[in-house]
Structures are given as structure tokens and as C-alpha cells.
Amino acid sequence: MGCTVSAEDKAAAERSKMIDKNLREDGEKAAREVKLLLLGAGESGKSTIVKQMKIIHEDGYSEDECKQYRAVVYSNTIQSIMAIVKAMASLKIDYSNPARADDAQQLFALSAAAEEQGILPEDLANVIRRLWADSGIQSCFTRSREYQLNDSAAYYLNDLERIAKADYIPTQQDVLRTRVKTTGIVETHFTFKELHFKMFDVGGQRSERKKWIHCFEGVTAIIFCVALSAYDLVLAEDEEMNRMHESMKLFDSICN
Image (cartoon, one colour):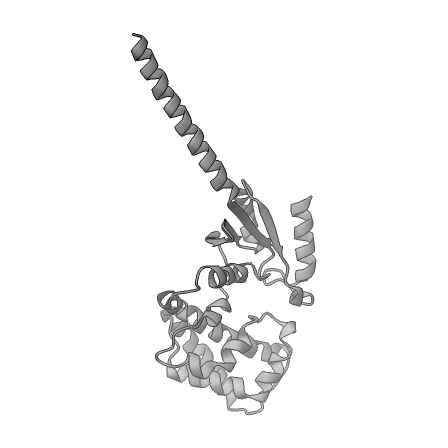
């Protein structure tokens, strides 16, 4: 009987040691885990930070991943030139070449199908090329603070020759500059100096903020993003609200 009790005690002690070991390992693992929550108003750079972390700490995007961004690059390019063309009328700017007005009509006629299919056909690329070369369009572009325009517009439009090639594959920089409205919660993981980071990117538009409450549990730190270049811009969802004022108001509501 004594031997049986001794064996049971020994087994219990072993289990206790194993539990302690597992708890210690879990504690060490938890101590090395950092949960970062990215918050900020829409278009403040949150998603760009996430992509930068992937490029810097995760060996960037593979060729297959870059290919998946091709349609996004095409869409950003098309949407950028369309935004400038639409602003021409509201800003009362004329094309330097009257023939560009026909190109503008062609742009709107061809763009919907191209975006839907995720392509940039040659005829549409030529239309965009001619429009971007027009001095009236360039004049309108210099006034882009007066309307909503993707901040990567010039980057893509100036590199249209490369982007429009049939064998085009987006570069890391092309991917970094893509703009897609974040909906829901995007999570990315990376390791730096033996710390395992979990970074959560959530949509910044007003309609997305109700989802933020689900992300605060267990957060190590919050990174609040503000685009300093947006000091004289208004929100895409509310053109009466200055972006910097919105960011300050949002920061205050989070902290208080």
C-alpha cells in the first residue's frame, strides 16, 4: 500500500512539475508577445505601416503576392486620373488641347469594364497617357488639395509606361503605395529582437470605428496614426470636416 501511495505521489509531483514548466513557458512566451493596435482616422497611414512591417521584417511580398496587387494598382491609377478629370469642371480648368475632352469621355466609357476585370487595356492606357500629359490636367493636379485624390496618383501616373506593359508585375514599392479601404480587422505577425509582434489594423472611416471595441483586449500598446500632410484636407466621408481636426477629436475620444 505504501508503495502504491508513493508511486501516486511521485506521478502527482511529476504532473505538478510539468504544469509548472508549461505555465513558466507560457509566461515567457506571453512576455515576448506584443500586441499592437493601429488606430487613426481614415487615410492616416495605418495600412501603409502594416505593409512596411511586412516588407522590413517578413522579407516583403513574394512574386505571387505582388501579382495579386496588379488589379489594385490598375484601379488606383484609373481612379486617380478620373478624380483629376472630374475636378477639371468644378475648378473651371480647361484642357490645353481640346481633343483631351474626347479622351475624358473615352476614359469614363472604358474604365468601368477595366476595373471590373482588373486589367489595363492598351486603348485605356493610351487615353490616360494623353490626359496626364495635358498641361490643363497638370494644372488641376497641382490643386489636388481642393478635392479628394489618392496620394499615390503621381507615382502611378508618372510610371504608366511600366505599369501598362503586358508582363507587368508590381514591385514592393508599388504594393506599398496601393490604397484599398480597410474594412474589418487585418492582422499581421512579425518578429523583431526576439519579440513576437501581432499588429492589428482596423478601418479608420467613421462607419468602421464601431468594430474597434473588439480589439482592445490584451493590447500592449496603441499606435495612433495621423497624416501631417492632411492638415488642409477634408474627410472623404464628410467634406465639412478637416482631417487634422477629426484626428485630434478622435484621439481625445480614445484617451478620455
